[in-house]
Image (cartoon, rainbow, N blue to C red; front, side):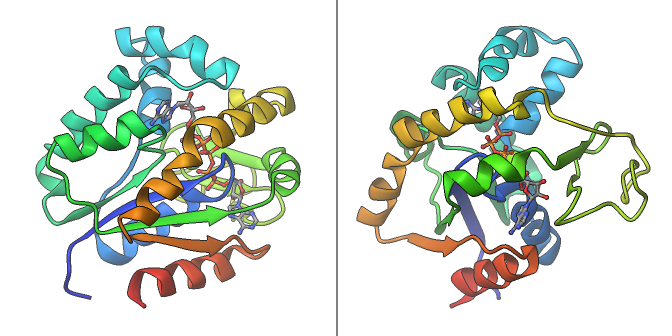
Length: 214
Ligand code: AP5
Ligand code: MG
């Protein structure tokens, strides 16, 4: 494919955005940008941004628009975004989508990965994340070849703080209320594609590739 891909991945928490973003990023050699990952790293490093965002994340609520819009503005200005990028977890509200337009960013594709809430609730309990490089695994569906250590960098695998069941259900409610309206927003622009998340990770990957290339 020789067009630049400027892709937004939409989907509920745990739908598999981060997993597919990592795969697409390698395939097309474009950066995968996760606002959630940027904020988690700010929290781990104790920065001002981290301190301001921590309580929102722990409650499963969205961080204020102005904060994430600034993060994305700065990240998209980096030279590695010139030939395309994947946005995983941004925009999450209509004002965030409008801010992206105001920045002059021309999105080429929006893919919404759809997974029922019940599947997500059970799936999230098995997620493990590398505390060093952020690679994502699942104890059953995508285990690390190195057990409790990361297959990429050897870092320790941990459970995300916001993966407790009560926080996951709040994040799902927030998704339906604040983020799902973006499907209509991008359908109106004729760039929305729906991928039905499959039980097998590689089946979702195949459908996502088809949505991008087809
Ligand atoms: P963020 O980190 O973006 O979390 P999220 O959207 O809730 O999504 P997740 O990362 O939990 O899930 P995912 O879709 O990436 O799934 P994954 O690939 O890991 O955001 C966290 C928080 O930051 C937010 O709650 C908010 O507070 C804040 N924030 C971030 N962006 C913001 C914004 N723009 N505005 C305001 N606030 C913002 O997969 C899940 C698990 O399932 C994994 O274990 C994986 O291995 C497994 N899996 C994946 N695909 C499959 C499959 N097909 N079959 C079986 N298992 C699978
Ligand atoms: Mg993610």
